[in-house]
Length: 68
Length: 405
Image 1 (tube, each protein chain N blue to C red):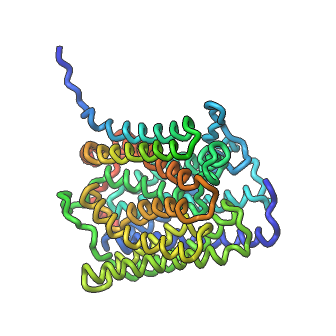
Image 2: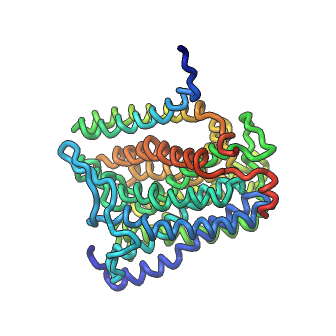
Image 3: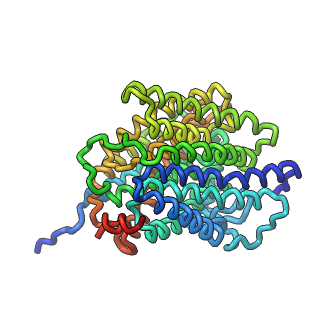
């Protein structure tokens, strides 16, 4: 039996990537003790957040639900 | 808490009394930026929003924000305790207004939370149902703002990045560029996404935001009033959050003025190039953006650095507003997201770049910026999405907008 999804799964990609970026950032400062290692992963975390922001903007769905 | 000296206490009281100028200035500017039929609705709404924010912050917000050294909940993770929320009593119980810093922090924050709550209301430009705005403000002032404010100002984990992980002085935000301005701007961004464009406006990616305000006098008067309020905001932040003494406040005032002035003149120059004449709306946004950026840097950088921060803020505001309009599909005529969000983030980054704080400060600032975008934006958007889709209708239709005036 085929089940139709009512929600666009891409909608969740943006927030998930934003949170993933933040977790990378936190993991970077907890795991690494050298400032260089931390800097690389903090920048990586911020880049993931930027990608997440793009997904967020592109797939957040229409705003019409808020109007009805 | 350590009691403040008598002179510092008097100064704090005077500065707290000057904070409403920032609220009045922003309310007036936002009324000027909105359409003529929404102006009175915007002004009345601003009063209501400030009132809801003050009551909710008094009831719950301060308890969860708390103050450095106050009671709090911490999550032990690894060798570090991640202090994540305050545990003060509700309704300001247990707080003695006897000259200690915690009493002044409560007085300062009850106005500051109103400024943060006013930003999304101003961005909505009269499209947001006042009841929905009040509910959203209640959540912002009662929980979201205090949560982040605790991390930064209440002895939370962002403030302890310096001690726990050797990252400079931890995440530093003396005047509220992150806690007040960026949190307000993220709320504005979420609300604008949920509200959609104004009736009759295209959402096809046309750069449609360089529209003259309906009442330019309101906008300019608002900018002047906001400057007085911002001097108080930055000075109070410097005393209470950065532990500066009264005599150190003159450089704070100089930095605030220089930052705003540089930003204003750069936007003036840009509007002269693109429109052939000074554009009042853009210049006002430049002035406000300079004030917002100064909230991050004024307590810690030299006047030359403040001038540089203002110049960059002046370039960023028109650029950000155009990009937000084209790529983020934002209908934000007051430029709230560009002015308070982008400029605030720039100020926080510039603090790490230009201040003399210990090594690792830039990294601490980046962690703070990453937390705002990566954690606070999904939380704020999620809460507003739930409110809009499950609790209360957000948007006024055009007939209701006409009746609201």
